[in-house]
Image (cartoon, rainbow, N blue to C red; front, side, top):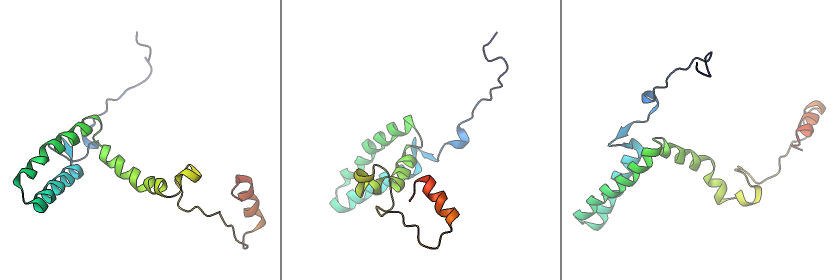
Length: 122
């Protein structure tokens, strides 16, 4: 007998949750690779720069082998945490939008004021 006799298990089909892929790389990474190699070709006017697509694509392919959503995670990290590292991460040790102190104002009722004091926001 199995240990988990009473637990029902459903298999997970990962296909619908995968991002759009092109040659084993997510679509966003593929477009960025194309733009980079074409820009290098246009600036240098050397056809050999078009061959730079292959090693860059192999690196991106290796990243997508481990996690197909790696580039989406990097994008989300950049939108949420990257600015904190540039500004005030070393002071607050967190991602903050403003280093200013939280100001309550004078028009709060006593009940709301007590609630904020209990939470430690004032």
